[in-house]
Length: 291
Image 1 (cartoon, rainbow, N blue to C red):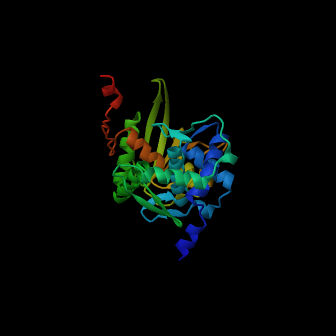
Image 2: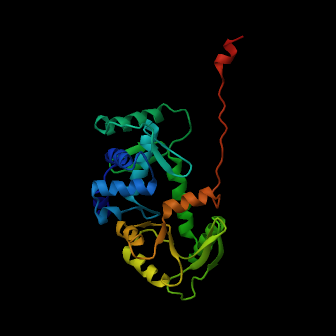
Image 3: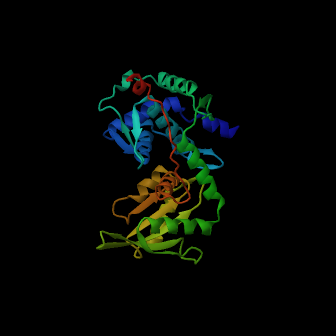
């Protein structure tokens, strides 16, 4: 019952449609998932309790982030948004009259598209009081991927991050986890244009919940004087205060990779994620009418 009451305190997908559009407008018409979500948090003034409510026991994302993902999908299918392979979402129109948008009409339009579709996609996801029909491949494969990663051992996750960094251009990447090194799980070097190099240390957390600001401060304490930058990788998410702490003025910077970004990077590098191209064949009836 407590879980259900918490869920009722989270805005529905329909209620998040307009905030997503407003966030993109304030961001100049485009933004990454993280930038859009952060701007929505700010606009809606969500509490820490709301932001830390998990979607499910097997999904490391928060319920708000999960519903925001669905909101972006609905807006895309409605024609207001498009997204690139690099995870940047863009408004399809330079000017959008937010006051003229009706969330219930957007939901209805997209549902009608799915009901009239001849594809075999048939996936139902219950959110709050609504049953949303259709499938979003971005949500489905990420859920499966994160669940798979959560099932592997902590040492295996550290090796996965090591491979991810190597594939991303890092060199001399070592895993030091388990050596009592103050919470540091590994280190490496990233080179820019073959000239500049930065020493980094990283920490890995197979986590279902949110990483707090105190955990970021603890990590920074272990990295000071030992590296130029820090990297914190988790299958979960970071609280708003944790993100602020990671970029606090006057403190060594720490880059954050949450579960969402981790999935995108693994997909981009084809590490444990295969992208299949489906051939779609159409008959051009106008071609035959010319004879």
